[in-house]
Amino acid sequence: MKKSALLTAIFLFLTVAAPGQKRTKVNLKQLDAYYAKMLNDWGVPGVSIGIVKDGKLVFTGNYGVLEAGKSDMPDENTLYAIASNSKAFTSALIGMLVQEGKLRWNDKVKDYLPYFALYDPWVSNEVTVRDLLCHRVGLGTFSGDVIWYKSDLSPEAIVKRLEYLPKTFDFRAGYGYSNVMYITAGELIRNVTGKSWSRNVNERILEPLGMDRTVTSPKALEAKGNYATPHAREAGKNVPIPWTDWEAIGALGGIISSVKDLSKWMIFNLNNGVWGKDTLLTKETRNMVWTPHNNLSVDHTEKNDVNRHFSAYGLGWGLSDYRGRLRVGHTGGYDGMITAITLIPDENLGVVVLTNGMKSPIMAATYYALDLFLG
Image (cartoon, rainbow, N blue to C red; front, side, top):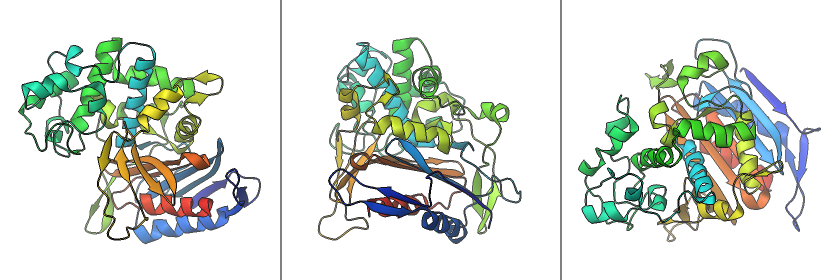
């Protein structure tokens, strides 16, 4: 089994503790061994995992290969598509514009995009900036994806077609995961700033955080080098497939990044939007995106797999509890790649899992790390 793990702590054991709690010794060698076995058990071509704790990248593990049938291995700088994990970047950009007084969370979208329309004229006039980011406009999950997926349409042209999508539930009375609302948010950003979503995310987030390998288009991969190949599953085997270009609809899922760069993103968010001496997001903005804006049902009659008591969507982030602590995170599904980012703010702890296959152990890998660190 090919693997490469960097245990960034001085020793193979890392001692961690939250204020006022008993100190827990984390066996990083045990973590590495589990991940190496996991790759084999799940049949994933390649996996890169990073864990941040108390403002530092304390573990990176890279296993398998960049492409099935070849020998090149991933490392902490290997690029993977993070897909819908990009939505948190979009909500952060909106938050920055709110901080600058260029718009407000409760502004009507139609005030900025006059061509924006949904299934009902009244709803079209009432949808706010905040509504775009929390999946409550009344469209069903993945409604409208057929409009943008592998399409040459511009974001504006996509938005102009949304009025033909049927209503699934009443406005603000349900949950329907909506990629097209994030495309709309990207158009809103372009309208307000005069710059594309891609340029905004580069200038406002990637460059300040030093995420210098992160890109927003597969066209940039050849110049960067060291990138994973997506894989489909055919007859029980991993088969390489081409990259799909999501650049035009980047606001919903266009970011391509690495463990090392995403460790900076996690540290930045766990540090309340502060990076070095710069406050890029205020605490008010951080709290806004991590506040439940759309509550999801949880069955309390039976114990669920992680003993969850609440589940909700913030703005670009999923919210729930895990072992008595707030869990903030998201997953991303791209053609041939599945990824996850999970934060436990009370413990100043974050886990990123990047894979280049469709049979993916992202949550198994995440929960194993969380359980070791939480003790």
